[in-house]
Length: 402
Image (cartoon, rainbow, N blue to C red; front, side):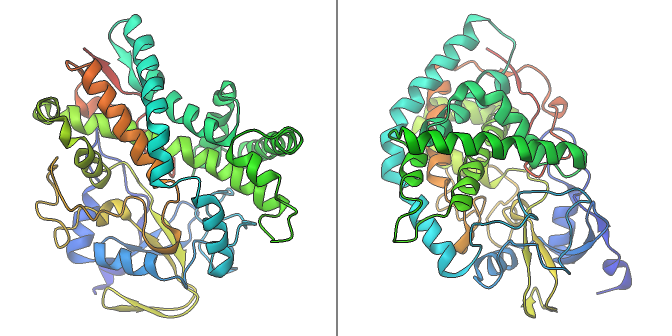
């Protein structure tokens, strides 16, 4: 590797217009798959962009996402709660697997399929409201945000009337430069206070929801979840359960409507909905950061041995466009099968809510295809406003007409 290749690049990379990926992804995959980058904090890390390399690191149980080691790279100069703050939830080993077993039974494919009719009914209701006002409409505000909030609130037993609060807290905690340290600190405190009170209510008056179940076994002898673990679990699930899916809905519709032939193909064969959803997950170009890992021991990847103490950023979105892993990697193929994308991660820390996300994406797409066959973008795709300064990328708005 030349000295030029070793010069750290600023990361995340500049965001292109519309829904296009950063040009650096393809460049690094081809010529510098183990790249040195400078994070917003000024600290340096190593960026991986090839599919096989990213899978290797994420699949290795030795390397959790915990970045609390003294020599771990800071993502920003402000505290970014999602990755950097010490979590009471075990990040590795049997403790983490115990946590996943407890939570995972609420997010099985079977359970999500039972929930699907209610998701479809809510999508129908939101489409009714959107069409009553007539085009154009902002699909993010009308459908993509409120539906996942309703779903995760239903699962957790949280009133979705507080969704504006959740949106602010999530956006603040997922920022890497959009908010000040004081704003992040304030949001963190408000979020914790809200959930502490909510858990107390669930313990006193339980319902048929995940938090009620967990809250009422928190002191059980079988050692399920401690109080702080329960608080972190509720906060994390609410934030991840609506923020990521809300953004992915916008990205999915933007991709499908950017080329009208894709939408027409789905209208002609709705049997393609499942594979189309998976392909839009693979082709997501608006996930600007990736998943960080901290190497506790030397590790060989991409032909290089990285020393212990290295902070590795795995770019799932770049890896999902690797031509060595996917034929026609830069092309959307609605019928791609199998599709081994890693949009939900891989290994012991893969997304625990992926069955829920898939169910929501498929249900909403089914409803919108049926209800709004003439749906189209109301602005050129390159004019779609992207979210800036966020760990979870997406669109600020999705103007549509029909």
